[in-house]
Image 1 (cartoon, rainbow, N blue to C red):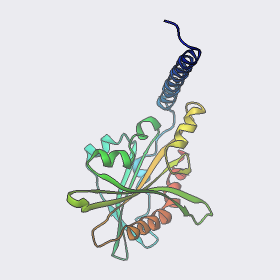
Image 2 (image 1 turned 90 degrees about the vertical axis):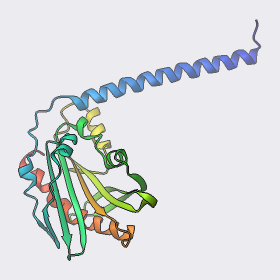
Image 3 (image 1 turned 90 degrees about the horizontal axis):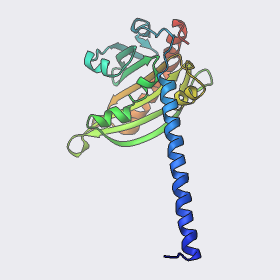
Image 4 (image 1 turned 120 degrees about the vertical axis):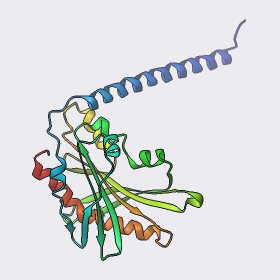
Length: 234
């Protein structure tokens, strides 16, 4: 069977496209393995301890805190070296839960993100946005804000604001971990994920819950960063 010139051109285009796709997939596969290897590389950094994290003041501005213990099985599942779980209240009305998870093995910590863990436990993402919070030192804190719901008619709602602290640098997501890993192993000394969680009852608006979470994140950011600076893991 002979092909026309046009048919031959079409076949060539298909073959070229297939070859390019195969090369691209191979490159992506190699890149993924290289990145995974670098993130899995042994680290020599001594992780911050839970005792050091507990140095975070119970009084943060107008917020007053108390310990909020988490089940040990849950803590083990997070693959963290140290954690802090507290409940903070302001003016006897506004209430937030603070969760800080820290470690030196970036590969283990990257999968444990609210949008992964909450949805894996039956929650549905209702809203997602990125907010930029101005800090007192003229810096800026970039955060993710998620609204999750579950139950009949989505009556149970939770708002989660979170960000990362990577070697003293605030970042919104895991992109800084990946870029550091590409530059070579051993470049990530520690990773901390900070979550501010609010139960959102039906009488509370989402905007009100978000404002409360943003206020606490802004009030506490410098103190949380100082814990790592003072512990010497920076």
